[in-house]
Length: 94
Length: 491
Image 1 (cartoon, chains in turn blue, purple):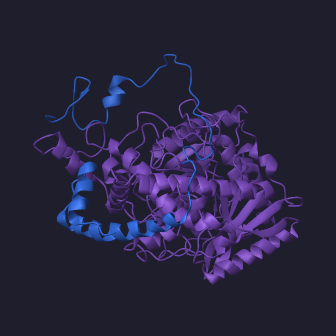
Image 2 (image 1 turned 90 degrees about the vertical axis):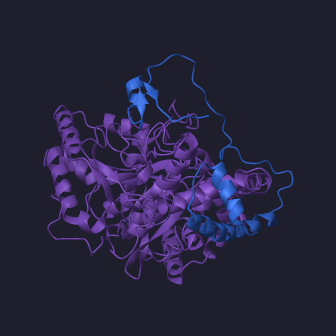
Image 3 (image 1 turned 90 degrees about the horizontal axis):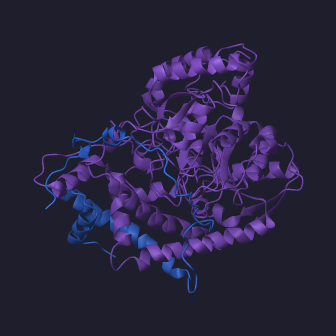
């Protein structure tokens, strides 16, 4: 399988990650050889085999739904690059 | 000689040294060697000394836990409230966590002393610590070699005597492989044994925190200190935590050990093979019942891992959007341009490669062929281990196919780099516990043996490792490159 530069740009768009044109070229070459190596998995017969969801097939354990102390608003936005009045501040979305 | 937890605790208990004095000695050791090793991203002298004096107060009151007053380091992927946590990434280079990881909270309660945060491959993605956005770490045994990764800083610091012990994280081998390269002991617990709360997520179905220590007894001490169910991590498990030091028995009679042949066909250096044969012979002499076994799906683990881990990573790393915390590009016309540039400029090459791989594997039309197929093959790998553990208490393999390689040697060839974890990946995929401990030298560099246990069989692997270590003493060898006669313990 050979990834085209357009396919690389499409995947980068899905990941919301801007790439330089050199990176697009490099990933088109480099990712293809890694993806090729995955082909060996087709040798394994997995008919009727369930996919793993938890390596030890344990179930999630949930706590009681009781209110507990949590981070303060000040702590939550403390690391925000831009904030205003306890809110995260962003550029226009639409 | 480096100081173990047991030695330090004795000295503290007998009041031969205070925790503040001990901490100062390690701070000056850091001054002495850090210029050559570069294991630390952040050193926090004030924090260390204040924790040490609090520990001294506890010791005066006779209130001593197994780690009270003992200096340690934390891999920079584990959150420390008020102390910068970077994941060795430009993305988080000034991030100050508002809360502690559960393991850190536990160790604070037990009055250990945090010296600083250790260097790593960016977001724990890598096998050499060369993917750190800041600087590479050097192997104390040979400064031109890598310390392994991704917990390379944690391993190198222990080997260089900059700390008594450290914490690392292991997703596909990131505790065991650097422990092997640096000639120390590293343990990856069973998935669910240790809380992941406050561990910056890489691949959530694989990540575990574990100890890097001078010897096996210390590994048992730290594992007991950090294990246990945590309501804040719903994948942590309700099983009781035993005192793991009770498994340190210097005799292997009655223990059944399997040697899976496939692990010796994974491009293993012949010298490493020879070392392993000697180690297996040694375990036989200690009374273990050892036989060869076969795990035919071993060779598929690498592909399986490099689909599953990047897929989970691509989802986990979606949180770095330049809005909530971390690096942010702010010059774009709208939020989407800012987000794209933030991620394009904030992540390094290997992190981008894995996000791309994972996004591709999960994208429309490819999900069944890659992710779903890999999770099915994963089930087969798990089942194969399950069968083996009906017959054996432990399995023994090399930790990595080679000893430490040179800086720069594999950095341009991701597939070559990935092969360095070929012996540790299958174990991670099955969520099993495993320990790496020194079992010899090859070209003056340490080699590690991996002992794998059944789920929650940490006691068995500590038992096997302790008996072997006691009989061979490979762990007492220390790097020459970095050692100085001035550093001798008081006992």
